[in-house]
Image 1 (cartoon, rainbow, N blue to C red):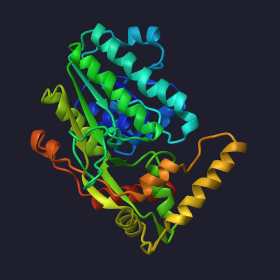
Image 2: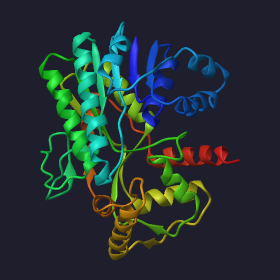
Image 3: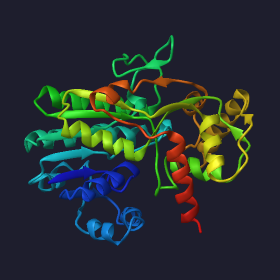
Length: 335
């Protein structure tokens, strides 16, 4: 039995699709029945056969913060894919981020140790990697040297420490550090919002860049690391390091629109995050732009995924191909 957390998110849903396609027996934790609909649609979009496969998933209502409630969920489980996470860059969300990302991961590690699972794969993020002050060239070995990290990066890094603690206690575990994950089916949250933004035909692009990867490649990296038993390892999972200008250009092409030509000046971004801060003082809800978000949109880091390419023999899908495919599916979803 394979246990998947975060099964109603982008990575978890596509992982379940891949595992079911491979006729694996899966159990997935969900918190809200509404989240199941997006997963079901993902399976249905690939044909009736996959709808039948969707029905083989054992869905369990649960919460990774409920240690006692999780105990029966682990019965019979041999492999765990821990994809669940809270994503926010709003400093006011730190308590929730700490609880879900760190305490939740600690709970999963502790139960995996108690039940002596055979494999544990944790989906982290490139946000949890250190930054290079010189060449901006980042590998799995780059030291965590961030003096002022954003709250999301900090909690993902601390969550990784929980996994390493489990490894030291005998847990056969591996860690995957994906870049910005692009994939279909979840257009209203996470990176899916980038397609909604691009579809409107904005002439502007952000000044920086990042490492990007297709969701299917992330799933492949996860399953390969488990299949090859690459314990006590972490792998950067990035297909290409691109500027936002190049990414939005590919999206514009996918939507048949004019490519963006105007870089948002840094001073405008500075004004935007301050206005968003003032707005956040009076209105509830996550802030959309923070000082750390601004840094991320303006910075250009290069993530070296050669370890996963060599060790796992990963063959990454070109981002333009990923983007064009997503744009086609996005257009189908709004018709």
